[in-house]
Length: 266
Image (cartoon, rainbow, N blue to C red; front, side, top):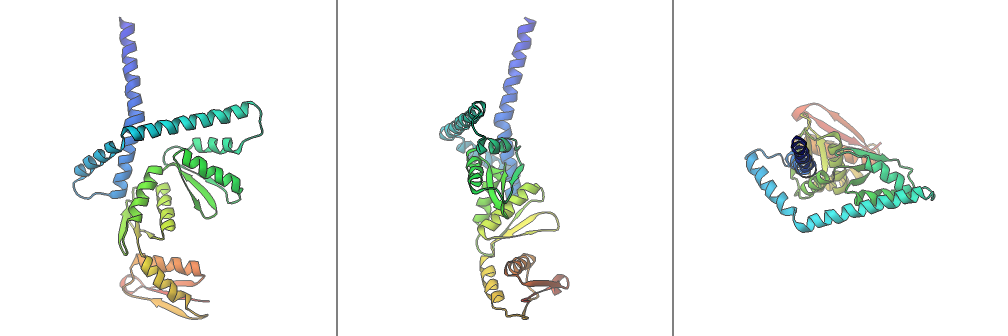
């Protein structure tokens, strides 16, 4: 009887562990990411309840079936790669890249160098999509992040910004999440700026950027355009980015309300 009782306890513990690992962990990580992105200032409890309702609605039978089919596809792909390796066939680059990506823990990233051949770059993007990872070019390199849920939520938040509308990401986001936000801003043509408190601000300054770019492109050699009072820190960041893009010199002078930014064409 004692042995059967111990076995029952062990089985229940295994069931609980599986539930916490495969159900609760995914849900709590997704909720934490939503809190970091949305940063509700009022009625935190109400925000969490509404989020849980939406999350539950998304976990319907169709979504679960899709996840099941995706897992089966990944399993067959791994078995194919393992069988190919056992048969002594020529090394398959998909195997090597998959092995690198399978080591990614939640929140981590893997970088692939600029000189990666085009066929291998395609493999990286293909496997990233297959494995529910988020891949983007950063410079000439490819960076793969195990942050798909965060990236999708951040993309939706940034893409919904109206002209001159700002948003902010908490100072509690990780360095890799910060990189994801910057890459999304680059992709969508948004401006981002680190704040003194460690948070990351994003704004839709597309009209300002377009007008300013026309002004700066019109500068002749030796000419200077000065932006003085009334220009916010975010707008100055946009000016700096344009100066770097156009190969112009950028100089800041003064502090606070007296700060000026001078752009000169060499």
